[in-house]
Image (cartoon, rainbow, N blue to C red; front, side):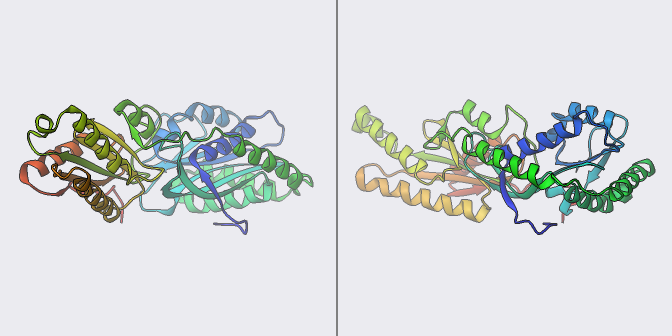
Length: 360
């Protein structure tokens, strides 16, 4: 972090609320220019939904800089300067918004932890460390920092506008009421967090449409950010078991298998039943080794069912992958499970994903 303030923990949902507050402040009618704005969005889909707001900000600002991995679209409005970030550089982890005028400053600087908390969707639960506030000196500090890090990728008019704004801000003393206003805003933010709708309890088992909604396939999400471990699982009972033991016994055994599968899930994990004997587990922010450990616990839980159902010895095959792709590569996962069953391999892996361009 770039200040003495202790970093706060943000979910993506709360981070977006603070971002929008700073953007609305930048749009407010005021005669205190020049206005400059920096916004780091990580990936294009996150900027795309806000592009209209930044067009309106650009109508008021001397310079507006937006940056993301791969760069923004080519049809940016006038005075919006786009910067392409490299996947490997530190700025690619930032979700930051800074607005500065001679009389106003708003700052959010947040760093992606590549972790997730329980939330209504996977995207909303992404975790960041950062800080925010409405103090002009903090905003000035961040404009100088970002201008220094991005200067060589900005055209001359952008650098000139930023330098003129910084010089103007330095000539005017900070307002005496900034700390009081910020204290009131922080109180409102804390109350808003307490009043947020709680996450509904779940056993982690979803149907496929619900899983698509939770992973963001039906909303705004982007590849290349949060890593997600996937486990494909197929559990087979001996041939002829339903005929030998009857439907009631089969139903009880099926519930026992479901209990074994959901029993390994954390509160942030989800699973979907894709066939009578096949499941997909979605395990955010786990490594391949951690996902394999989950498979080990699944194997123990499935094997333990033989103590309750001594005439039914289940066979388990699995496939494991870690991905940053969106939507999730569930078709590839299912194909890997089918291959494992066909070849008699207990645990299959998907081919590693290619490293992003420029990544270390």
